[in-house]
Image (tube, rainbow, N blue to C red):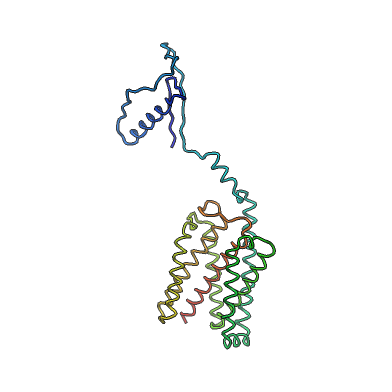
Length: 304
């Protein structure tokens, strides 16, 4: 809001006369917006003592006072102090995240291919379910370390070692899941996941909608989906499984858009990643893609 105030009388700012002037101007602006006529009050600001108003025909001095709600210097300093205020830093961060993510996906695809096309390994995994159960504790242990130990995931080469170990475990888990599907279903799910990921990434980069504001709602949605999945362990219903896979696909599609916007930053409300958090950013997007792949694979498997 901006107001131009014309002052014809001498004003003593130490005596508080300017406050009376600002109040009158604000009242005049509010009456003008409401369409009602404005009547100036009879009370006038006090004249400065010892300086009576000269009775001359000369036009008094006119002062223009502008009141605006502009950004204060402190606010501008806060915004400019962000590490990503330099566009080169942001560009380097995005390139590093996409390179790490590409390597993760290639390694994961290679491990899954080994489980799908190596018949002896496929038979061994089906005959020895303990192998799958043994992977879960190590997988969640490394995930918790990467998610909770912020200092460790910023240290080189510890962050790369942990991320590589996590990618290997994730690939092995996906390999043990893929042995229960046909190779054609794996390929269709991979193609569908690739198309959806590229489309959602382009959408996240182009849209003006801020999906980072949905982080709380998506977390609640994820919690509800987990409870739903536990119920499905005891309830055998084809349509409930289809609905579950559909909900999971929608949820992690939204998570993918949100995490891409978090990485890109810019005008989005929540973009507080540190430039050294490239491993954490790549981990979030990688998990979104993997979960999206699993739910799409489940949908294709249910459609057999």
